Image (cartoon, rainbow, N blue to C red):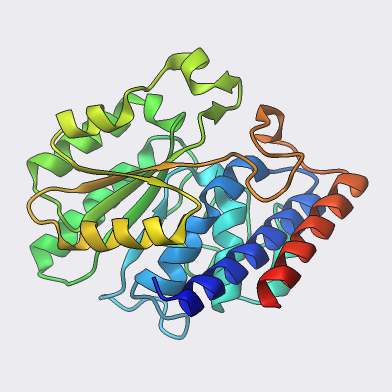
Length: 280
C-alpha cells in the first residue's frame, strides 16, 4: 500500500477511536473494547475500498456493509461521521432516547446504516440476502459484514455460511473480528469456536487470515477477496480488544462498560498523542 494512503488511514482510524471514546463516555454505557478491535477494518472499508457516497446514501449500486456484531456500533458511527454521513456532533448523543445513534445500528434512524443489527448471528444472514439480491438483479455491488468471534458461537451463523457457499456468493465478504474475548471471558473458555479458519473452509469459503491492525494486510486481503470467484470469502482478522488505549487492550472487562472521567481523559490523551505523531 502507498505510504501516504496508509498514513491517512491510520490518522482516520485514530480519529475514529477518539469518536468511540467520546460517544461511550457521554452515553455512560456501551461497548468500547470490541469497537476498537474492528475499527481499522471499518475505516479501511469506508475510506478506501467500498463504493459509497454520503451525498447519495441510497444509491442502488452502492456496496453494502452489515455490522453483524451490532454492539460495536460506536465504531461504525465514528467512521460514518468522519465520512460525512451525519454531523460529528451526533457522536455525543450516543444511546440517548431521542438520538439518531442508538446502542445498536438502525437503518431507520442513522444515515449510512444498511441493516438493523444487534441480535447476534442475524447480520450475516441479512448480508447473504443482500448478496443474493445483487446476483439475481445483476447489480454490481458487493456486501461486507463484520462478525465477532464470540458471535460465531451462534448456530445461525453456520446456516448462513452454508447457504452463502451453496449459492456461490462470491460478492460477499465476512470478516471475523478475532480478538478472543467476549463478555464472560475468552472465547476458548466460554465456548471455543476454534479452529475458525478450518471451519469456514469446511463450509466452502475462501479463507484469508490477517492482522486486523495492519493496513497492508487488510488491503491485500480485500483485494484478494475481490478477485476470488465462485465462493464467498472469510477474512479471519486477528485483533486486540481495546486496541489503541493502553488500559483497555486485551482486558475483557472493557467489553461492555464506559470509561469514567479519569479514564476518559487518559484515553483521549493517549489517542491525541498518537494522532499528533501520525500527523507530524
